[in-house]
Image 1 (cartoon, one colour):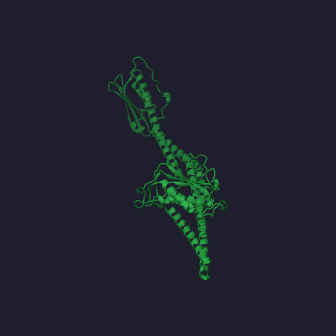
Image 2: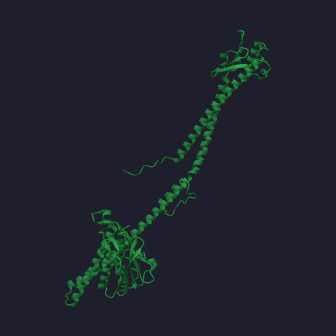
Length: 489
């Protein structure tokens, strides 16, 4: 099952513009509804307030002005009037409610000049109760006066609907204009805002075309686009670094194969020449023995080179280690005895602690590491120098140090000598190896969770084999039971 998902790649510009314009349209609709409701309530409230004012003014004139005259005055303001007196008589004036549904009888709000102001006089009739009713076209106020009479005023509300209809048309036109202006402004703003994304895509295309040094380098890396640009720059650095590392690794591999072929060609050519001479020439005595010895030496050299190459391949693939608790002093002492036998003119001394140094290691592999380090010291001192092997504690690790009195290693060469088939200047002394001893030693040490390094020294060369005190037990490693398998990173 694939772990990737398809990226939604719709136009961000279009989605942003549509989203903003949709939001603006919704806000305009909400605004129109609010204006319509508020204005309608306000206009209807004004009509209701006018009816209350007329009722209060009329009540103050009851008993002073005749009911018929009061009704005429009120009807002149475009109102339907009905006065039910306490004695049972009724006075009706003005247009009927059905006539008012078509619109107000007079000017909107009525002729303000004919309005009768309310004058408060002692003992005047007052409004004791009022009841509003009506519908969309009419507003009716039925009021009970303190003298027992009833005053009913009805006003037309048709003008409210007409006013709201005009306002709606105005709002609709204004909304269209606002949407058009907003669309133009949003398009310009979105183009300017998303321009950095165009720069990102341009840089990506340029890098894909071969301009590996192009970078975005955002001025504000804490913003959204800044974070995207920073992540892209980091990714490009990693990709370019991986590409450079891959090319370097490929070049090293080619150089390694070339050097390995060259190293093998020399002994093979010697063996072939000596074998041809032995087969074709009739040699007896010392000459034949000399050629046979040459064949043996060259074959041994070629065999050792092949073994080293195979071991180097195993190190790369992951060594199988048989770990066991071992006293590291015994391994060092055994290597010292071997070195004295192989190189009798080499002075080998030890610097070992009195107590046992127990470490979980593959004894044979660590012995091979020490053998490679001692052989390296013997070569650089032409087999007649002095070598000191010591065991020291270093935090949570144990170090085995191999110190020789040879010409030493320059600081710039201390890491390069661990590359494969690297040999320093032959003038340092010795016959020189093929350049695999130190890489193999480091690979075995790292397989144990440690390392081998060339560290600074006052004189000669000093190599330190570092091993962890608490090695990983075989049962904790993958692979066969009792056998650990680990790789070199």
